[in-house]
Length: 372
Image 1 (cartoon, rainbow, N blue to C red):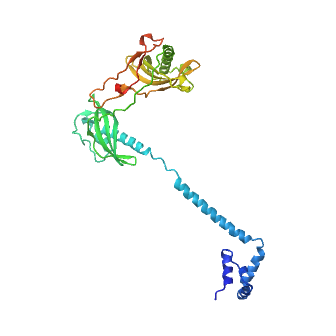
Image 2: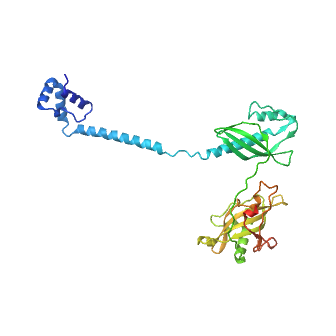
Image 3: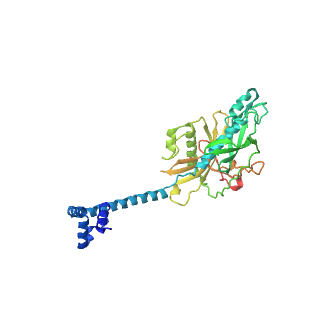
């Protein structure tokens, strides 16, 4: 026969839930005490030892611990869901760079041979494919060496495949050659999918550039000190004269010199653009400068185009930055034309540097679409 009082007592001993013999009527309690005296005695002893409700505190403490545990688990789940994923945007670029290097070396070894040492070619090519022999793709006669090879076009038709066009030069031809090769990419590990094949030069992309509508400074009173400052700067920049560089540049200006044996010869042209409308632009000038350099061989000279920013500090123009990557119309090639037309530039004279009157720089109009 079921004993409700005994069941309540067992539940209280195992996991208190609020049910106890105290909820029994007097008749039920007497019946419970007679049926199980020891259980009744344990209950009375427990009741005497817990006058302040210690067991209720134990119950609430357990409930609090359960709540905290669930809360911590919830936080961990949320963090896992919103945790930022690793940025893999550069992985494809890195893989492409590795495939380009692999293809360039592959083409270089493929088109290098010497009939007096045929096995040397086979040893090199076996690193790309163990099945390659010394005469693969070659009749075993003649001698040539690839002196330089570089990837100039990369296609990525599939996730694990690159098709790369390599330009290379050899010791037997003055003209560059072009070869296309397919490369398999296994997470940064590469192997050939094809043998190199000679191809025609790829069409070069023609850049789209906006018209340059900035007005140019024509006031000689402003141009003279700027030209003088540029001449002093480039002279010190080429010679490694750091003390002069400090004197003609801002605190954040270029301090590292060329110092490679190249000497400054003259300013070919200087174009200074009018400032903007803001107060900050009033003491700033952007300039396009073409510099003629005397090379270390003592006979040859080369031209370089720079973008130079000058800042007026205390009435003195100082060089704040120099950029060698300035757009230059002479660099653009129309892939559809047999020869690129020379860029048209208007030659408006500016004030010449005082130290070099025979080689006064000319102010050239900024490159436009018409100049390509």
